[in-house]
Length: 274
Image (cartoon, rainbow, N blue to C red; front, top):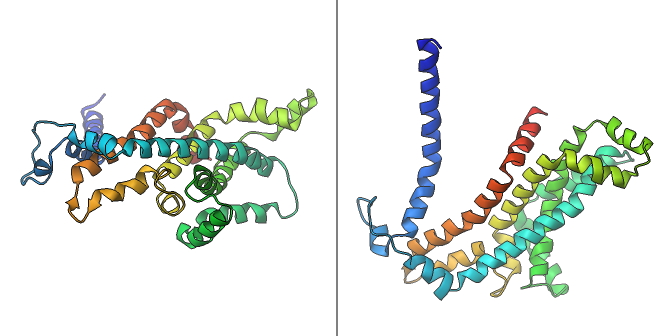
């Protein structure tokens, strides 16, 4: 390797490290604040070396019962992701493989529901759930989140199904496989990377959503994003406790992303190539 090529390589590596630090520093600051006392969190200049305490975590997740809100978020995200995939995958496959009159209009109409601002639908959703007696229940918020995520799954997965040559399905049909069998035995395994990428985005969309959860949930079913503003009180804002909740909010998503990272990277790169 020439000196010029080595210098370029080092420059690129330094730039890459700087970008990583730029994204990690705020996350490090969030985590460090969660282990500081209220006085240390406001100290000027900020303390980089301090005596860590778990008081903030104990306050929010034990004394203020935020652990229940964490469990609520997990329940909602799990069922929303599962329902969205169960309904969205066959729909995306149908849009990819079959042709019917008005299918493009139907597809873009379905996609248009995803672009509709949530605040526009918040009041109608509230009245619908009230009439169905689903306010302050897991079913209501799961259905609301799923309605938005299904359109996202159809849009994402149709692109992945389109990359599979139709001749593969036709060969399976010749061998006696039904369309349903071809879907489960051929298309699903070949798009596993796309399903992984889509599922994690669905989980994140549900996990971070605030407005619908704020409107449709109650005290017993509130998710973490809904419970978090309760730490801003007339007596002051408990930044250490907010940082503790914020740190914990990121953990399940990071674990899920770590588990499916191989398939997620393949899915994202496949979409970019297409």
